[in-house]
Amino acid sequence: MNKRFRTSTIILLLFLIGSASAAQTLAIQFFTSTDYSRPPSFLEQDLIYGRTSPYSQGLELICSQDKVKVDIQGLGTYYTPLDLNNIPPGDYRVELTKTGYYPYLFTVTIKSDGRSSVEVNLKPYQTRLNLEGLPPQSTVYINNQKIEGNSAEVTPGEVALRIKAFGYEDFFQVISVGSDGIESFEPELLPRPFQFTAIDVNRENLWLGDSPSQKIFRFAVKASAPGTGEYRIIRERDNNVVQRGPLNIESEKTFLTLDMRDSRADATGGYRLEVRGSDTENDDDMVIHVSVLEGGKSRWRNSFTGSAGFLYCPEAGTLPAGVSQIQTGFNPAFTAASIEDLVVPAFLSLRTGITERIEITAGTALYLAQDTERSSFNLQASGKFMFFGHQGGRGFALSAALSANYNGKAADFGSVPPFDPYGGVTGISLSFPLRYSVGVFSVLLAPEFRFSPSYPMKEPGGFTGGELYIWNYFKGALVLDAGPFSAALSAALQSPSYLHGGNEWPLYGGLEFSLSPGKTGFTVSLFGGIRYLSNDNLMGTAGLTAGFIW
Image 1: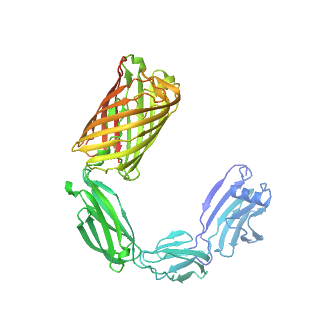
Image 2: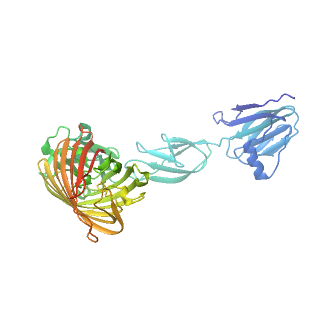
Image 3: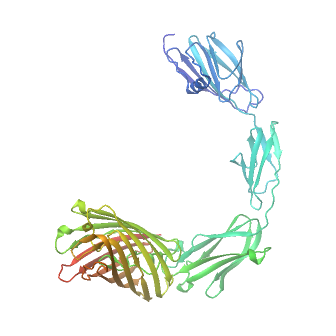
């Protein structure tokens, strides 16, 4: 036949001996001398056995299983992988057999000047394994595969069986399964004693000023086995039981809620959930503490509470544990001397409350100038520890904060204005912010020490570098915080470098307005500031920030 043709057919034949349900797979490709190409699976076998198979009229046969016995009616008995050449045309009955697998019987056609390429996958013998006497809601794994229900087909031989069931020790055993078709096995699971193991809660802190969906505590009480008990939710300031009831433990987790959506302002404070089993000792009781705070998360919305010419006056408090804030903004910094000195800092920072008293911050700042060689990129990281005061309270709060700055890509120190949020110079700073609050008013004081190889001189935008400089900022702010609106009037005084002198005590002043729409945790702030130095021009800045807390 000169006409080129190639027929590729996937034939699923059920010529089975012994079981019509044991489906095997068969794939046959027909080639001619003009279109023959060795299938990839045969090429792999050629490499293993070091053989070559030029085209000839005949049959090539391979199985997914190795060394399968092949009986071909009229030709003889062989083992896979198989190559038979120069077979007379016709239909040939083929039977495949291998210990542990269902036999397979099919017919293959050898055409004149044709070659038949056959690939077969045998199905192993399967035994239906029935697991009896399992506890309700058991989870069963056979050979690390999860199965549905208590029964599965498995290959005869060694089978790894793992069972997890509430109220029982985890079961693991390797069992031997025969080839009889059906086999039953009843595992012996050891019961666990009843006791409470843990209490989880969806949030440790709840704010009465947040949206209703955020004002519900959801507790998950975990136990080792079924049992009964009782729970109490106690307000800690007066030991008043605000909620109680029985516990009927039927699964690994039992859920309880404390709904604070209709609570008044006097509901603030600490609460604890106590659970006790009916048949357990007092030592087995479980307790978890939560807090209800006044206001909303937006109370911690501003990382810049008071900015003196954009010299940040840090808060004395810290973010609550588990609360994070991202903030971004920009401020076109300029001098009265020339618009050519325009520098536009843009920043991005992330704050996270690690514990109730520890907070960390990481940020970047990009300084864009008309002269690209004066543009720069800053990195900043800081940690804060509040060692006096508490969240949301009135009176005093005192913290210590250590920051590190890296002024990265910059042609000279003049690339950064001396009133940027992160210091604008490579080095470290240590501050001790103190806050005193009465009603909606707060006073902030924050002496700060700077250590750096560069120092902002009196010239607009000018820096001196190359040696170690140590100086102070004496910062303060008066803050009005009235719900979603806040305002801050702030000031700072920059000292000369104690090692070199050279500055004339410049004074910074700033004004900031912030607004948090609704209870979204989103805030936007407008601010402006100036720097005054005798016998020098005023330097000014203004800008916009936006933040989101979650």
